[in-house]
Image (cartoon, rainbow, N blue to C red):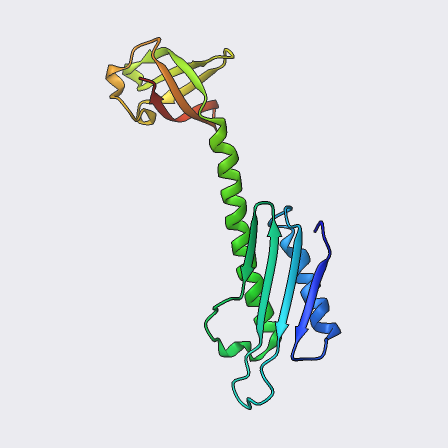
Length: 182
């Protein structure tokens, strides 16, 4: 993490063993996002006047570029959280899921700005149900008739401009989807 981890214990004495477990779990979060700038973990013990059903609450506040991620607010009561280590485990699992969602969103935003590659159809083989797209940099990309989305395969002609999604196939680059540019 870029900034140090902050651990706060409320209504309880600090526990070196619990803090060590928090540090271990926080370190594991870095596997899911290298963008964590701050991590604050708050462990709150149940109020002293309760005798049964004392549930520990764990709150995790993460700061990542462009977002604050808070875990532990409004969580339903789970009786397994009478054990602070179980409450920690569940909170860090929720943090992991939120970080994975953040990374997916971040990745898609970067990809969406790039746009789909362009090219034009340079070969059509209707009898074999495939064709080839020539990209602007001169590469040839295979596509199957089932990859064409906007128009029937039979209506395609050489020279038609297309956008496509490229992937690596068994025999080289291929287009998984082909969109005819109007």
